[in-house]
Image (cartoon, rainbow, N blue to C red; front, side):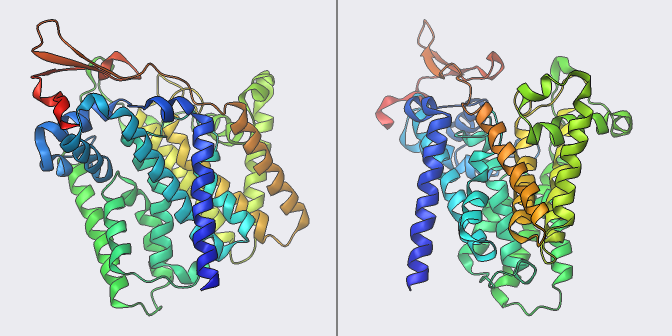
Length: 423
């Protein structure tokens, strides 16, 4: 009872600290609310027009259950113009709850101080703030929790943590998170490997039901990706074929914008001029060394986390069709670096607490210190113009203006959509 009570208190403390860090990084979003891109034009508007059908309406090729449910709930109780503040607060609450859950898992496998770092990494890693406090990007915030939930539920013998029950609530969480973004499909290979490695482990019926629910959710998202119409790219032209990416400068981009920019503040690397590859290779070798010399029972996990990070970055490059732009965590495409940086942080952290070699412990600790300095160097998220809802001159329509660009502005006919009596 005492241990359970302590876990609850520490989990609540983690959530509170996550909220304080989030407020420190983006106070305006907490105080004045925040809508971002698809928050208005896709989720809010479709919730009002489509009702419950919006929950099963794909966008960008897959389902977004959590943002859809939030938008639908607010469409029933509030006018669109009143939701920026509640949207930001709900998104913050989900971020904090995710951090608290990560702590409850990490405390079973690493010492408590490391568990705090593990749990708070989603709000501490270098990031420009694109995914935070917006329902549009909750899929990115929830992806680390989904991976941990899947591993904890299906593959606990590999983690060294006590087995967790695959009860109804856990199964529901797996389905909801799997149907929020494409990450259930992206994590599928590692989960299959975990299941194969633990195939002889006896599992209760409820866990098998959760496994079945996960695979069904993956199938649903896969079908959505197959049947959804191709993206309308407008003036950007057709996508490059996958074959053309064989000529993409993968080595240079990975070394600079993943290995180097993960560890070293941009201001430092910019002063290196043409000598940056030396520092980038040193950073990459240091992270690999930490993984290779982690504790015997954690080495595979560290390497798997690095592989997942690299794989997600590759998919981000292809998804963004990054031939004419340079994706960087602090300028353009920061969301494509969010998950990789979290998983790299976890890999180095596991090495720090499990490696039997003092030199590796020192190296891992130094890397994590540099990562935090990197994050602090661009700690505050940029301020964007607030979203606005204004009536047209004749009163027959409303204009919804949402950052980051006029592309996301939308004109909506009819005043009923913003009836203030709904508040």
